[in-house]
Length: 283
Image (cartoon, rainbow, N blue to C red; front, side, top):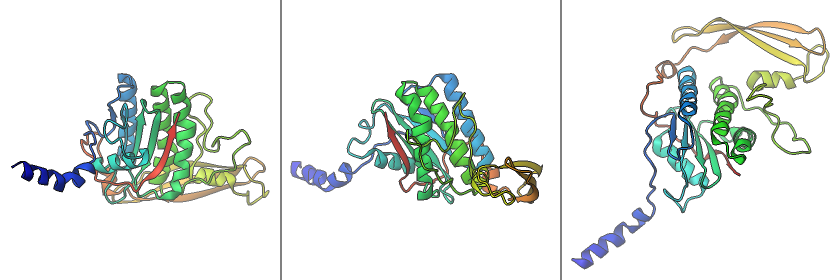
């Protein structure tokens, strides 16, 4: 009998050794297993993520764990985050557009994991979000502020532009002082975010004076899109360096069935996966 048990253990050992022990989620928005978020902060973040899902269909989730070693000590941070992302199935299974924010305060490490649908082009943007939005407050020990700030930045410069089919912004050359400062300015919270069409327009040459950095775009929705018809918006482009002004009517794509059926009351993820894209940070 002893030999039989030993033989079974040896036969199953490769599978047991490679097993991944991930926590089960309680919510599709915020799972604060490390207990670092006050109740009101957690509720505010969850409301943001619910709104994002309702507006765009993108599932974004925040998870905090005290340390990685409790679950998988042998994996790298990147491997662990990708495994947890795929175990939970974050994001739409067809679009693979989910996003996971993983914070490990005991390890002083975090990971912003992107679904496979984003591709490598968004990794630099994720790196900028980690370095400029999450880590400054984490270094001060203020995890609620860092997560709040980082989630807002991720939504504004990654999730919503991606949902609008905008390509990732190309970073400018960093200043001598270092830092990926090209995405945002933080005077009081996160303001002045520049992304998508507005970012690209700003860096184009004005067709009238030929100068860069002066173009401004303002959009006004004339007719909202529905599941059965396209919408329309009026886009006004002006130049701060001259009197150039242009107005155009642009079609807004129809709302997909997947997006319109999203609900903040959803209790499960959509079966999405990640190929390991995103960015990590330590403090």
